[in-house]
Length: 262
Image (cartoon, rainbow, N blue to C red; front, top):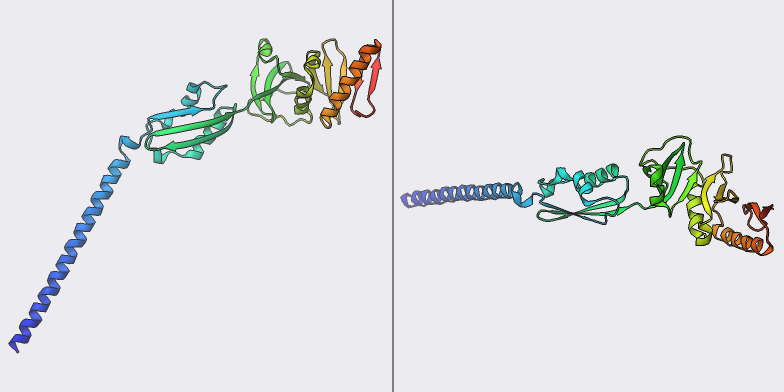
């Protein structure tokens, strides 16, 4: 009987010690995890992950400093906490010439900004003021009249809209961009003869090119532009060979063009 009681006590002791040891191991594990979390938190918030360098690639129109000024708030920020999409959208909103922006985080402390800029496509005049548009019709900036020569390779399109647009706005008037598309297809010697283009104020919105000597070349729309350019070239050669001078060349229907001669 006594031996049985001692055996029971011994078993209880082992069970108690086992529980104590289990609690100790749990406490040690929790302490270890706590230390790890504290260490990771300290490491996470240390200078190691704070952005120290921003690399800008692809900029042409904008100076690097102009782009970095828009990103000054992320310098010194934790690289994990920088909102990639928000940063990209901010640049696109604030810098009109930017078409695409991609931000890449290079751990632990560097950010790469890869950009694609919009390209100037045509000049437009609106109520006596001048603007640069890209090939999507986005107004890139207003320029002074004295700056027109800076963009002398671009076609000037008049009679676009009867108000002053703002940079970033998209001009959706029919055939405005078509003027630029046709101009690119013209031979260089023909481009030299073009003073400007315009879009008529009627339901057709015909594209009309005005030469340096005030003659008119009516294209209509930019549809079949390549064929129309070829027909125009042939007409001009024929007029020159036959010694005729013209006022208007109408190639809206390029299969049956019309020419008004002097």
